[in-house]
Image (cartoon, rainbow, N blue to C red; front, side):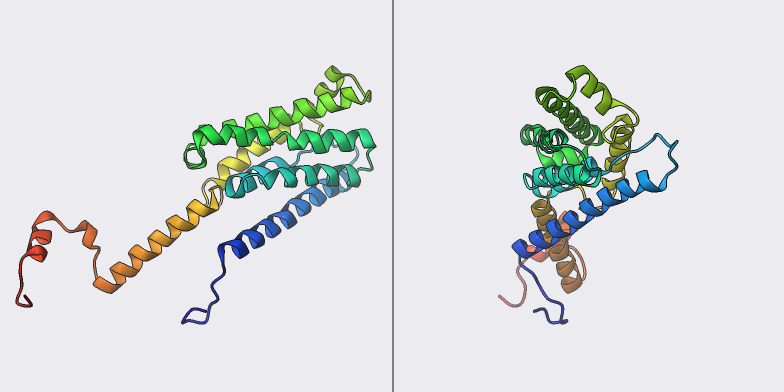
Length: 228
């Protein structure tokens, strides 16, 4: 317990709370996307999903658990739309293909991707392409439709994972990058935040940042004084 009465939580508690909140956000996003198809007039052919950018935000924050969010989102989509078992397999395994974005992050590093807008957008494109290809492949393997037909359907403007979803995903990632700590590995973020708070505490205590003193001031501080 802190002196001001606020409660400190452990890193594991913070992680669990954050993952739980994002699970709620993902579920709400899928329900809203489904509601839009019901509320909009029948002639409306445009639809999109924010599942992909949400999953990628979780991926940047916590890594591999994001794959379960992608799979769960796919299963929820199929349940809401009353799709057949072939589509359950297609969406669950297809969405799991976003794990290829993790392979993209490993050699580059999360921090570098988070700081570079083009690397961030590349992550979205890789995840989207992998997702579409695997979905189409699973539908073709189950005999539901041919691979070309499935691929054309998933890439269509009217598809939930279509080109419009890709465009919205790119825009969403550009936006979330502007919020400090949102599109960032949370362990690195908390360490950085701790350093900032420590520097602020030192400044509040000593009245100025000693690290920014010029050489002349430092030489004066290093001189012997009357205490010795």
